[in-house]
Length: 416
Image (cartoon, rainbow, N blue to C red; front, side, top):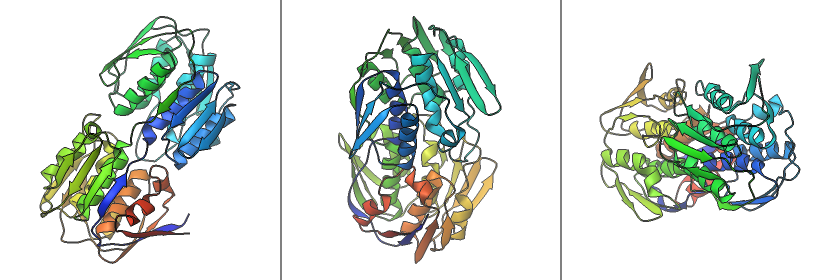
């Protein structure tokens, strides 16, 4: 398991390149199950969650080879085996094989997925959608089994704009007979990337990025070569790393539109942000100011950036009010930040953060992926040494994080 050790106080300066998006790569890997032949996916990050998804694809019969950040996935021998509880519980996004297996084979059996313990993430909207498409679903004793003699397009209205349910519905419907109209769909950029991938395979999907997605079913799909979009959450994390250390970072391989909610809040905090076509520069030349944040589905401020932003607010002048509307259990990083000297009070789903002059390094522990990122950021800015236990959570979403920060001036390393 090891630990991450940070000697804080260094101003980060230089250039960091963002990798491919984890949250785009995972559904695209699932969608590769939709057709036989060899699909090539480029700029896939080397992360624990990606490794789990590859293991799941291989369990189902796919042959996967990796060359750096490029995956070759041969789906000719895929078969809809019952997916073990052990595999499913290693990662929440393992549920993204539900739609592809049902669409291609008419049968799927998976256990309820696992993942970070940050709050309730039920499968009800996924199951509602595939039932509407004509699947018979049996959900009991922790397992989900769905069967169909043929999916048929229909109108589906999600009760909430669930990202996973939107993705699973798209993947199930591309091989359904007729037209599916998905309303109240999630609008995240990762869904746009999935649409691009599916259409490259010969699907007919339109409307991703809006609340209404239209899917015209096709008879078959073919392999494709695809480049995954940059990771907007990794980019946002690096932007806050620059801000919290009073640094000056150019962050490349970014789609600026995807990080606009973070840019807007950093500018409220007094941070200078400039953009080019594929990069963002973040520089701090004045005292950080407080800012209020309310997490919302895209294009609102992302819940996956809330823990990192709280770390920044700990050192901002004044009082910041952070409201978490997506997950009810996403303040597990707060007790650890308090150990470092932060002044944070939790009231239901709201964190009230009063800025302090400094944070002090100490021993802290990660509880989930983004909480771990928040503690790394706090450690970069803290006085003395911070020791972060259980860094394997961080490895689920950030590739070579310590190396990237060392190259721009941080004193950070991992001790096994």
